[in-house]
Structures are given as structure tokens and as C-alpha cells.
Length: 457
Image (tube, rainbow, N blue to C red; front, side, top):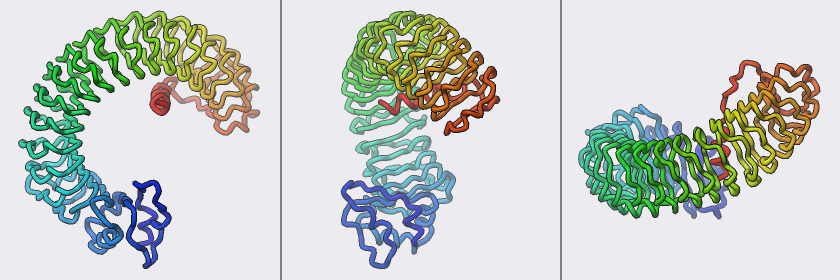
């Protein structure tokens, strides 16, 4: 049993608990006085299910199994009888194909969190008291009335559902890919609502109380004025939406590929705004207070001098932008194939910069204090002598660079594809040096930038 303390991940819910006692495997081990959780990994979850002695041992070490024991099983695990999983905090049984319409689900009815997604269950009346319930892709469920008081309910991919009016009291509701749902008028009190790819929905006028809503790919929606109180809104690929002025109070707003939006002047106070692929936009200078902004593939935009308070900016594929003058507050910046972009001196205060395939950039001398700097395939950059203090530097495929003697103090350096550089033995003290010739010019930069942005939000 001593291996139990090594392999089970135990999380203290109460931060004042002294968790050192959890590693005690002596016979004097006493039950917890505070609320803790045993999160059993898949190996020990299997032991918990199939080994009575092990299960009794775990249960003997807790005060309340519904608050303290979590088990997780691999997909296609052979579990037919769930009696052994009675009264636990969290039970994850996704894709366990033996759980079907014949399985008695009553032993799971007192769980706090239950995932039986992608199982062939039919009758869910025993699960009315579960707080967090995932029934995604359980396509045989016909009656969802017993689930009306579940706090967080996930029914993604349940294509058989048409009437969801009984779910009006659910706090967090996910109905992504429930393609036959057309009426959501009863869901006005749901606070977190996800309706991605529900193309039959056209009217959302009753959703004025929603706090967070995702309508990705709901192409039938044209009027979003009811969402004026929503704080987090995702309308990606909602091509029917043209007027977004009502969304001025949003904190996070995603309008990716909303190709018919032409005016975003009302969104100047949105904190995080994604306009990726909004091809009709020509003017964004009124977005003076947006903190994080993506203009990726907004190909008609030429001037961004008004974005004076923007902290994070993505202008990838904006081929008409020439300069960044006035954008001294930028801390995170991404540019890809901005073929006219020349002056990047305004980025001197940034911490993360990624510039790829921008052939008009030649002078990077002002970027010496940047912590992470990617200058990938910037073919006309020659002088990098000012970049010796950069922590992480990528100058791969900059084949006009010859002299890198000043870069010996860089902590992470990528010189892949720099064919004009000769001897690099003097860089042997660089902790991480990449010079592999086979790597792609496009590998990983944009995804790394997005991860960096999300981390700093």
C-alpha cells in the first residue's frame, strides 16, 4: 500500500491543510480532519473497481467519499456493474462501452461529478442529483426532464434532442452540435450557454441574461442585440451577423470569420477582441482601449496608429500595414507575411515579439531589451549585434546574417537555415542552441504566440 501515496495525486481543497500526513503509510494513519481529495490515476482507479481490499483501504482513509474520492477510467474499459462506484465525488467513465441501456445507474446518482459521455445509456432519471454531468454523444437519451436541476450539464453531440425547454434552470449548459435544436427561448436564465454548430437556431432574443455564450457556426443568427449584457461572447463563423454594436459591454469577444462585419467602432472598450478573418473591416483605429487584439487576415486594414493602448496585437497576413508608430505600449506582438511592414522601433518595450516572413524589415537594433524575439525568415535582416541581451532569440532562415559574435550570451538561440553563418563553436556556452537544417520555416510560431497571449491574460 505504500505505493499508493506515490502514485495517487492528492489535492488539498483547504489550503490550510498540512498535506504531509498524506504520505504516512503507517498503521497509525488517521482519517483526515479536513476535506481532502484522493484523485486516483487510471491504474489505481482500476484497482478501486476490481479489488475489494484496495477499495476498502481507500474508503477507510476518508471521512466522506462523496467529497474525497475521484476515479477515472480509460475509454473502452470493461465496466458493466457500477455498484462499486457508489457515492464518490467524481467518476469518469467516458467511452466505457459496456455501460448501456441495461446498466443500473442508481449507484452513480449521488456523485458530484459524473462523465458517462459516449456511452449507450437511455434512462438518466437516476442522475437528477448529480451536480456536474457529461452525457455528450449519448444519442439514445430521449427524456432529459430529470436533468432540469443539474448545475453543469454537457449534452454535446446529442443529435436526437429537439426540445430543451426543461433545462431552463441549468447554470452551465453545453449543447454543441445538437443540430436539431431550433428553439432556445426557454434558456434565458442559463448563465453559461454553448450552442456551437446549432445551425437551426435563428432567434436568440430571449437570452438577455446570459453571462457567457458561444454560438460558433450558428449561421442562421443575424440579430445579436439581446446579448448586450453578456461578458464573454463567441460568434465565430456567424456569417449572418453584421451589427455588433450591442456587444460593447463584453469583456471577451470572438468575431473570427464574421466576414460581413464592417463597423467595430462600438467595441473600443472590449478587453480581448478577436477579429481574425473579418475581411470587410477597413478601419480599427477607434479600438483605442482594447487590451488584446487579433487582426489576423484582416487584409484591408492599412492604418493601426490608433491602437495606442493595445497590449497584445496580432497582425498576421495584414499585408497593407507599413508601420507601428505610436504603439509604444505593445508588450506582445505577432506579424506574419506583413510584406510592407518596415519600422518596428515602437516595439522596444515589448517582452514577446514574433515576426515571420516580413521582407521589408531591416533594422532591429531597437529590440535589444525584448525577452523573446522571433525574426524567422526575415530575409533582409543582416545586423543582430544589438540583440545580445535577448533571452530567447530565433533568427532561423535569415540567410543574410553573417556575424553572430554578439549573441554568445543569449540563453536560447535558433540559427536554423542561416546559411551565411560559418563557425559557431564560440556559441558552445549557449544553454540551448538549435541549428537543425531540416526544420520548417513555419513550425509552431503562431501557436506559441497564442499560448503566450492566453497565459498572460
